[in-house]
Length: 301
Length: 65
Length: 261
Image 1 (cartoon, rainbow over the protein chains, first blue to last red):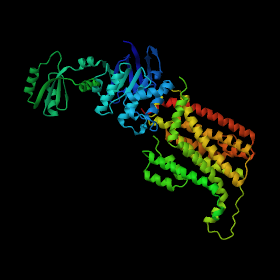
Image 2 (tube, chains in turn green, purple, yellow; image 1 turned 180 degrees about the vertical axis):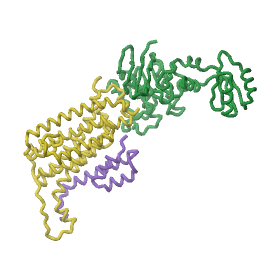
Image 3 (cartoon, rainbow over the protein chains, first blue to last red; image 1 turned 90 degrees about the horizontal axis):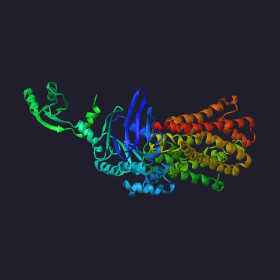
Image 4 (cartoon, chains in turn blue, orange, yellow; image 1 turned 180 degrees about the horizontal axis):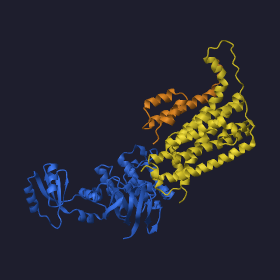
């Protein structure tokens, strides 16, 4: 598959702080990539550099085989909290966005109408954007980002402000776009990324800490483990101390990772019986996406 | 000065302009969702503030989004 | 990229129509243009009507020339008018950067020269248009109440005063491109009103200054202008306008990174 965009050692410094630190990864044509990380990991900064809102301190952006600093003609960008000129109607705004992105003035209005229809704002196209709800603003934000049919779509937390229904609807729209567009979006919720994402890029403190397909990440991190439920946090802590195997603890639950089917459950139960701790339950489980997320972004802490 | 000698043709435009200015300010006040400070206060300033009232409203009271 | 001036200008036009600036700014200048000759003409009667003057009291009111009335209108414009312009437009670039609406412009391949020119154009239309409207109404009232003003002199005066207005417009545009709305307001007010005041206070020591342009406009009206310092002030002012506009383009582009995302 062809590479659409490659960033090499992309870095953004604010004084001594590095918001983004030597970030290197590629986007393949018509695939989608999720930038995943907690708040402050550098997701927005990375997207802003690609969108031409910030200038990188170092590193290069290669688009379609050419080193360039100006990919604004071929991108669409949706900020996390889109803010609109309240005195423009949705149609006027989208038409302006289309024209400014180089859509022929003769067809701009028509394209704007089609796009608004696509995002589900067909009925509200002549309403002033000042009257729009949060969900409608997100849709309008998406409309202005795709009205000129960009080859790269950059979305900053496109669904995190929405309720579950709105989230599903926007995700479905993105899935539809994915067939013709390369998508890079940020999220701090891994579940959002599950269905439509070809590549996951995990960021922590501006650095890339893990990368791969959902499948690869799952295989790497979703090792089976024992979850041992204790009656209290103190009990769980005591167990982590005496455990013969590496163990970690979250509240009143202790975790032991199983590698190559070791340790076996009997051994664990034996240790537990000896310890005289107040046990509630032991189970064999695999990590949830949320746990994988925590594991990856906390790696090396 | 008696009533007859007042040059109404010269004063009328002044009254009309001032009235339009006040009207525009009031319409705007009704339409905008937010003002800096309570709306009723701005309504008072516009109506009672004579010539300056609407101007002060447009410069200070109106919150531009 | 093809010029996107007309698209950006359409946006500015719609904004200023829908927030009523297109109405209230001309009305304000019209109002002061009419009030000044009226109050000056009827001041004696007004004072007589409101004050309990003993019968037969006569105030020695000075006889105003028509030119003096026009210039006293300009001095109203120089204070209240300039206040309206600086505070009314201080956010013209900084506001959309601060509230994040400009993000949708800045992620697109727009020309920042067109961007600044679209702002400049709408300001010029509103400011210069309003002042011309106000001064023409003023001319009519002055004509009726105080006598004729020489048309040629008036045109020269108007042209000169428009240069001053362009200077003010470019100061506001530049500060709004370079700073936040609050700082832009303060610096614009200082440059337009405070420096004008200083120039009036200490300005006897020099003759060439942009802040003397309104005064020279008055001399043009009287036909008593000293050509050399006048021409030089005009040249300096026009140069400053060009520099300020270039600066506005530079800072508008440089401050993209300060846009709230």
